[in-house]
Length: 102
Image (cartoon, rainbow, N blue to C red; front, top):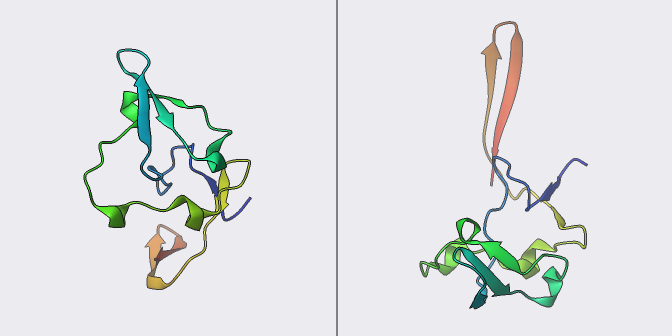
C-alpha cells in the first residue's frame, strides 16, 4: 500500500525508535523485558540489547506514539507536511524527479 509503512521493517526512512519505555528486568546477558503501553500489546515484550538505545535526554528526537496512530497491524500512514526542495535529475536517457518532504 502506498503511504503505509511498518516500523518493524528496516527501510531507509523508517521510524527507528518509538518512545521511552522502562526496563522491567534483565532476562539474559543481552536480553531485556520492557514495559510497553497497551497500544503495543501485539509487540513482544522481550528485546535484544542491539535494538535498544540509551535515552540521551533530548525529548525533541522522540516521536510520541499517540501522534503516529499505530494500527493493530503495526502500520501507520505518513502525511507530508511541506515540500522543501524539488529537482529533476537526468540519468542516461531518463529524467528522475526527487522531492524533499518535511
